[in-house]
Image (cartoon, rainbow, N blue to C red; front, side, top):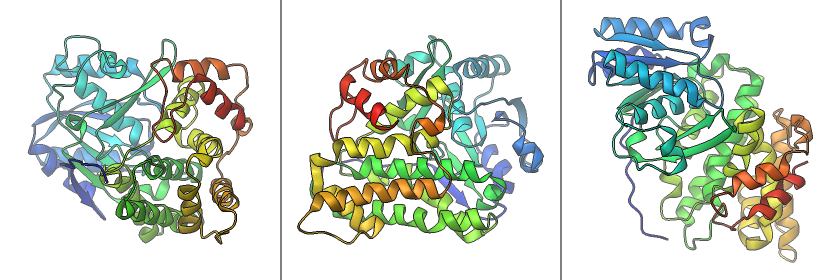
Length: 387
């Protein structure tokens, strides 16, 4: 196990009707805030009114900025930065899923910075300041509600890039599983792939003697495997929704990666797909992750066999670990398919004409991943394996 420092300062408020506490929590930080959200779903299903009423009761004034899209755009981030500066706002409340939270984090970075906020996403600027923010989560998926990360898409060139810093962890995150009852099945499925990918990016490691976090990763994956079919059958099963929502937070809050090297190649490879073709991030991960696995599994057959046996209950073949490993990868693909996700680029209607461009962009700053270092030719092969 590697040395590590672990701290996650986000206050998580979990359970039924917890969105009613948003005013009280927000008022601890500011009396005027930016209310940041996406499309019309929070208004359609009544969450917007609950949040606004709670804020008003706590004496918190709001300035609104809606319109966040999946794969959140840099243009709206810059609008938010200017709005915060103009209105003198020092706190952001994100009501939505990962895209809204990531957009809010980008705005939080940009307000105190004199340059272009995109500098943080290209590594040209170092994070030193950020506005505080809070979250009311609507979609269990990205884990951004307690993570230090933000991913933004720049329309010019369609670059999708991340930044990570502990200053980007929200001050509080309100998680009511009831809010996720109205999610469409496909959105639930995409969130599932995102959550599971966050775990697997940590699980496939070169670090030895990490059995505790191996087991934590495996139990989080098995929790998803058990509960997702339940909510697809009965969307208002509170207990199953609660398991999924908490698993999504645990998956990306940092705990599962303690003491171990993480990978993140599959995320980098997928960002080019969703950056250019604007597909759901989770759908892209459902395609890329099994292809990545088939490309790298021989690097550590024992770990892939362990994944197959412990997570997917594959009967171990002690005389042929490769057969065991491949069976685990196949069961992952079968699970994704069973919940309505694509597992090939063809199912996403993504053509072959830009695969080399994506591989080039993915590796323009050097190889991606840690489990196996992947260069342009490797990434291109993975895209082709995912067809």
